[in-house]
Each structure stands twice: as C-alpha cells, then as structure tokens.
Length: 253
Image 1 (cartoon, rainbow, N blue to C red):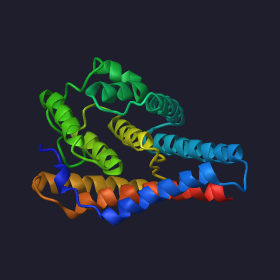
Image 2 (image 1 turned 180 degrees about the vertical axis):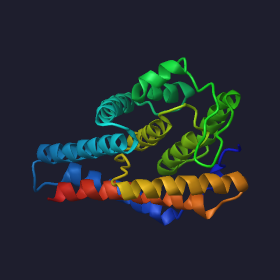
Image 3 (image 1 turned 90 degrees about the vertical axis):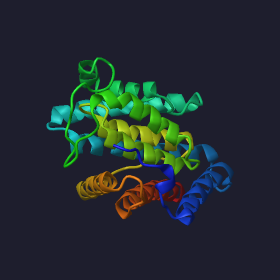
Image 4 (image 1 turned 135 degrees about the horizontal axis):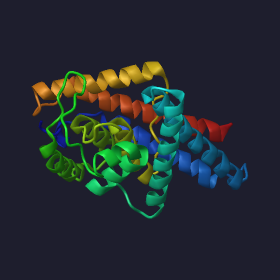
C-alpha cells in the first residue's frame, strides 16, 4: 500500500474558499449582530452545534451497531470522544501523533482496544474487496500519514485526508470508521468548523461507495490523481457545507 500523496488531491479551490467565507460570515454574525442579544445568539449557536454532534453520534451508532443496546454503547462512547476533542481544542491541541489516534480508539471502542493490547491490530483484516496493510506495516504507515498531513495547509483537506487514510490503513480490527470520522472532525473543530455529519442511510451508502471506489482506484494507480478520490473529498466538503448552512439558518431564525 502507498499512501495518498497530498499533491494528488485535486479540489476546486473556489469551493474551499466559499466554506472559509461561510465560516467567517457565521462568526461575524454571531459576534457583531446588534439586533439580538448576543448571549441568546451564542446559546442558539451552541444548541445547533450540539445538535449536529448528537446527530453525528446517533447516526454513526445506528449505521454500525448490530443491536439497540450496542447502538446505545456506541453513542455514549462517541459522545465521550467528542467531549475529549472539545477539551483538547480548548487546550490548543490538534491531533498530531499516533498516541492521539490510539486514544480515540480507546474512547470509541474500549473493548476492542483492550484486545489489541492498547495498540494497533495484530491480525490481517478484510476491507471490502481490499486487503489492508499487514500489521507489521501499521506503525510506519501511521507515522508517514501524519508526516504527509503536515504538507496540507488547508484544514478541510487535512481533515478529510486523515479520515480517508485512517480507514484505508485500517489500523484496528474494529472501530476504524468511528476513529477516522472523529479524527477528521477534530481537525475541523480545531479550525472552528462544525462537524461533518452523514445524515441518512442513503447518504451512508454513498459515503461507503465513494470510499471503496477511491481505495480501488488508488490500489490500481497509487501515484496518480483519480476521479473517485476527488469525488469522496468533494462529497465530504458538501457535507461540511450542509453543517455550516444548518448553523447559519438556526442563527437567523
């Protein structure tokens, strides 16, 4: 397996600039609007943000859990993960080390984390039609992924890249998707963006389809840009756009 090279990520820069301006517009309104009580606006914003986080946790649990009881455990663990991320953001820390990734796994899947002896998987796993890298390669791949992450200047692309590559490396026997999405949202929240939400079963199907298509394309041509990977990145950007629009509409209500 060869990691996706950041230079091969082809995204419309105007789209990224639009999201940056939307974020600024949201916070300008939140801070400077004089028609309303600013404390009330902040509470409205906070409720909207918490609602997005709740939906993200609930939908992720519903999509991955095999029973109602398991979904409740998933939801609770994901909430702990987001609370931890919020505290780290407040302390001016963004995800930047293997320890951060491993600790997220501990939060979202403590049972499986214990089986892995608090580190990466020791066995080979299957990811759709692909075989993720062998266990002995995981340490170097994660380190290299984080090194490449530093080459990406835009926080949106950085978060999506982290998400994409964690799932593709598949460092754990279970919980990889949850860790990947939390890692992505950690990067976004550090730069004051809301979390990305997969909002429906159809959206989840599209998300899984896009990831699998990207992985297969990279398996065949790891050194080249491809439409499937670009599509996954663009669709994640659109989901982030939806989160920004949702928060702005709530403030204007």
